[in-house]
Length: 214
Ligand SMILES: Nc1ncnc2c1ncn2[C@@H]1O[C@H](COP(=O)(O)OP(=O)(O)OP(=O)(O)O)[C@@H](O)[C@H]1O
Image (cartoon, rainbow, N blue to C red; front, top):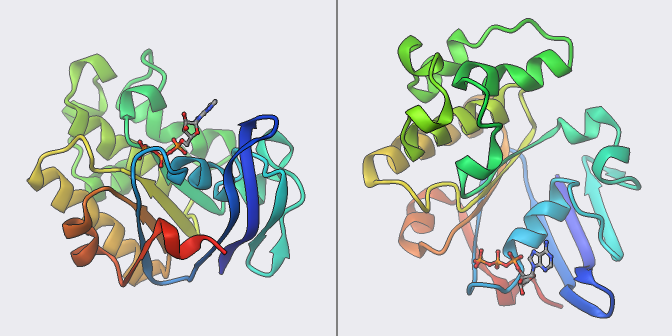
């Protein structure tokens, strides 16, 4: 389980964005999270993916309390949790081809740079893998971001408005890929979305922001 208990976090001293937030993400299931704009969903996503250190509270990853965040977090902890953000163009190096985007975490962790099976899973052809971000659509780039997030076989995946910029067919394709990871590898997913209709079909359970507050 990936959990946060009593989380308090923010960006400016004395102005918390998260105040006493509790959340639990089980392996092999999708937890949907809906909430109004600006309430702190992305901040919570960053804390749970160890990219932002909380001021108080505890993140527990598979029974181990996380004590170090960001670059100080041990690599095995960071790579246990994948993340896909809303805007793929802000998430990739514009100089990289899509193949290089997907290879990056593999190379950084000493694994062979084999992207064939991953690319096939997310529906990227050889032609698309050779292109750079400005030569592909948002949906194609988001497919590469999802493949990158899955490259190191994470036990948990946080999808922060992953499909907000995408059309219905790309949304269905990417949600299908995530569902397959949940089924086949028991990945635990936090799916954050404004779209409650989407969450009602994607998630096993949906929580509203107010449900997370103590
Ligand atoms: N890097 C940052 N520095 C300072 N303030 C920030 C930063 N990121 C977010 N905030 C502020 O924190 C609050 C919560 O933002 P956050 O992005 O977590 O909300 P959200 O629920 O994900 O919103 P949305 O649904 O609109 O994406 C907002 O008031 C936002 O302005």
